[in-house]
Image (tube, rainbow, N blue to C red; front, side, top):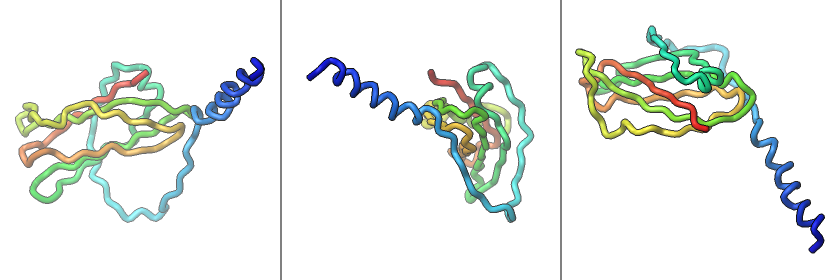
Length: 140
């Protein structure tokens, strides 16, 4: 096979895969909202500037569900047009502010598309959990 043909195959693959790195997301939703959110006043501590320049927290909501468990949902928006990856984990605390140890405290990786709005939600492991912290970190 000619050297030019050998170079053409990887070049074609690169050109075809390049748009996948920049794939903004379109969405459609109901404008007549019937839900009632229980917004959580929140404090944000930014130590990862790479992630801070990409993600915007638009809402933090909570709901008490069956069995006295706490369900939380954090809404994010990727403010860039490019895709990226980050990791997150939830920590749970009792009414005294002490951490409640759980098996599910591992970091979870998430791919985010350009312009995407998305939700991270979790349910407390038991009814003793009355508060939470969501931790995030950028992945290169």
